[in-house]
Amino acid sequence: MVATGKAYDEARAWAEKIAERGPLATEAAKLMIAVAEGEESAAATEALASGFIALTGDLKAGVDAFKAKQKPAFSRS
Image 1: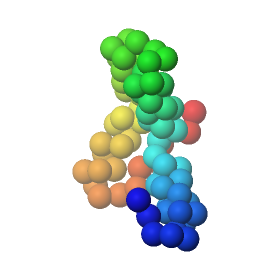
Image 2 (image 1 turned 135 degrees about the vertical axis):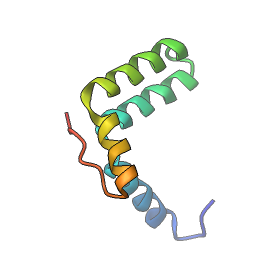
Image 3 (image 1 turned 90 degrees about the horizontal axis):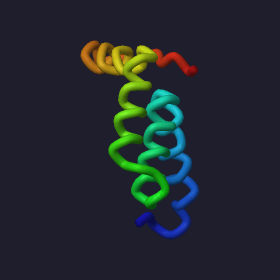
């Protein structure tokens, strides 16, 4: 819930947070939403998404950046 008249600002803030995330992780999250809505097999989708992200280097980039308290440099592909 947000205060009256603040929905746009709140949505914009969430969009900016999502845009900073790794694109592959964002796609995986969207897949998981589809799973929650009954559109996909949860176990298969989670395994596929996790493995795919790990193969790209985005997982390592995220963990390394977290440890160094820096912004990650995701692959964007």
